[in-house]
Length: 205
Image 1 (spheres, rainbow, N blue to C red):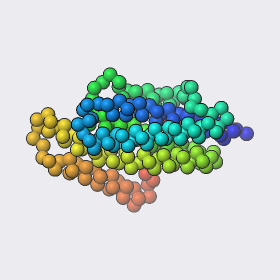
Image 2: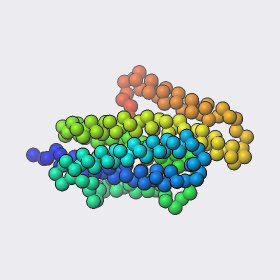
Image 3: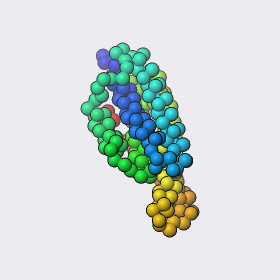
Image 4: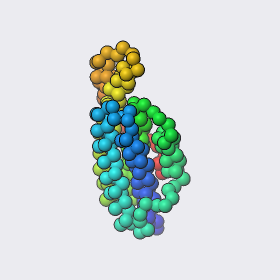
């Protein structure tokens, strides 16, 4: 009989590794002069950073209760690939605009969210209720931040265009944010009508 806790431990370590990588990128962004021009974006990055640091700390504490616990020195091949993908997004050498940095954050948070989706499901399947609850709680904290990040991006894009000298209507950012919000809302409504569950899948395991 396979040990359910031992089977789950590597996935917890992988999740911690993914969020640690995002934290490192957010810490660099926090010191970026371009992003400092946008107080709302900087404040959001700070909140995301605090949230993910809390997640990593909680995951490491939880891992310590497992046999052979602690964040693995090496992560599984599939997660190494994911971290490589994040490294490509968060190129330490590349100097991006604030809007592109937020786009990268959105992509990374979406990866964290779907990874927690899969960790929650895996923990439920292995009858590890504490881990399932941790994954779900962390997902609940990421979801609103992801939505807020999506709504903050139009303001930054519009202002960057204005700073570049383009004639941009002041209401463009608000209109774009409203349009995006309605697009997501419309998609959720249509899925509910046809009974299609929402969510995105990736091969985290």
